[in-house]
Length: 195
Image (cartoon, rainbow, N blue to C red; front, side, top):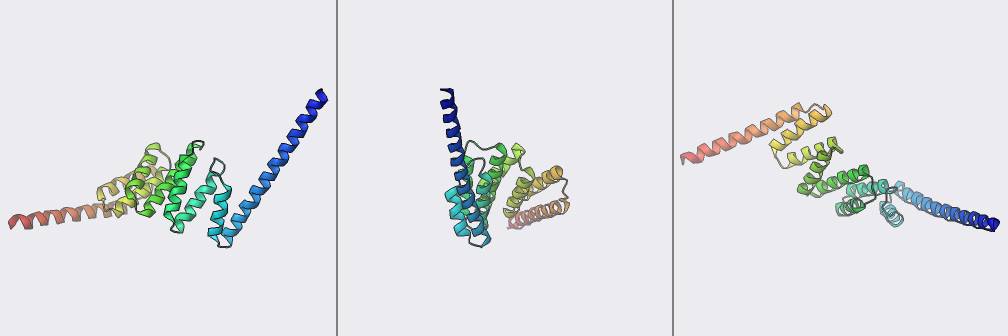
C-alpha cells in the first residue's frame, strides 16, 4: 500500500512537470515569435501574438505595459488606453506595477488630448509619492499647453524642490507670461474704461 501511494505520487508529479514544461515551451515559443515580429518591423503581427498569449497577471504586466507604449507610439492611443485600463483593473498587481500602469495611462490621456483626466492621474500619483518627478514633469507640460502660468510656476517649484533640478529659467518665463497677462488686462481696462 505505501509503495502504491508513493508510485501514484511520483507519477502524478512527473506528469505535472511534463505538462508545465510543455506549457512553458509553448509560451516561450510564442513569446520569441512575437519578439521576432517586433525586430522584423512587423508590429501588427507582434501585437496579435502578445495579445493572444498573455493574460494580465503580475508576471506579464511588463509585457502589457510595453505593448501599450508601442500602441501609443504608433498613434493608436485608444488601444493603449484600453490596455492600460485593463491592467489597472486587475486586483492581483503589486502597488509598484499599478502606479506604473497609472503613469502610462496618464501619458495615453495626454497624447489623446484628455488633459483633465491626465491631470487627475498625475496629481494622484504625486499625492501617493509614486513616480513623482515624472508626474510633475507631465503636469508641468499640461499646464504649459493650457497656458495656466500660475500652476506651471507652482509645478516648476515643486519639481526643483523634489529633484534639485534647476528650473529657474522656466520659472522666469512663467513670470514673464504672468506679467504680460497683467499688462494686457490693465491696458484693456484702461482703454475700455475711458470709452
